[in-house]
Amino acid sequence: MKELVVISGKGGTGKTTVVGALAALAEDKVIADCDVDAADLHLILRPQVQKTIGYEGSELAVIDQGLCTGCGECVRACRFDAVLEEGGRLRIDPLSCEGCGACAHACPMDAISLKPRLSGWIHVSSTPYGTLVHGELRPGEEISGKLVTQVKWRARELGRLEGARLLLVDGAPGIGCPVIASLSGAHFALVVTEPSRSALHDLARVVEVARHFRARPFLVINKADLSPGLTREIEDYARRAGLVLVGRIPYDEGVVRAQVAGCTVVEDGDGPAARALHKLWGKLAPELEIR
Image (cartoon, rainbow, N blue to C red):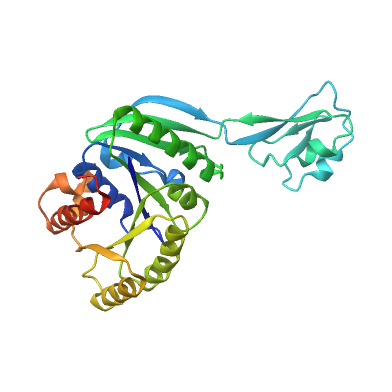
């Protein structure tokens, strides 16, 4: 089973729009939404949740009131102001606690312990285009890289059980921990960029990350006709960097209509963007050796 991760150096380039289109065009695949900080692939794939698994990715300090003497050592040790005093008793504010364990280390009575806490959920859903595994973080949680790893692991296992030939992953934007977790073990990376100065700068960084993890990068330029000059600069960079340019997607208001309708671009009609995405997949699929 080949793994294709769709990434972008910055947010807003149209990465999820491209993933949705590829999900509709590719066959024998499992889909994973690894943009767990702002998962939105479900908005266009219309999933029906079949299974939900709780995800414990962080810890919460818990005070044993039977052992606590109220000495206040934990209050002084906590740098997040998570230990509060109310009515002569100490308690932990779960929204402020980072689970670092400093309070437990400082407590002379061993009255504080760290317990796993629910950080989010992993959903396994059915869609018109195949199985979708997607993660969801609880508000305030920040350990998204670990959740991405769990989402990918479960998607891989389901892919093997289903005999899928492709694992299609919607990665997170940027080059941080969630992107690294998305790229880990992947064979290919499709980088979605746009003709803007910031996108060009971030493109070089994310390509470097993809190559570090030995994921062969491909490039698609979204909204390519909005700035022909910058598009040419991106194409020049691709040639210098040895990137295979698999597509140019023109600006198309049909993309917005498809998003409002809650469907992928390629099923909404035969507009310029849809035709470009069909052409993109026709060029990319043979490179993945899954056709």
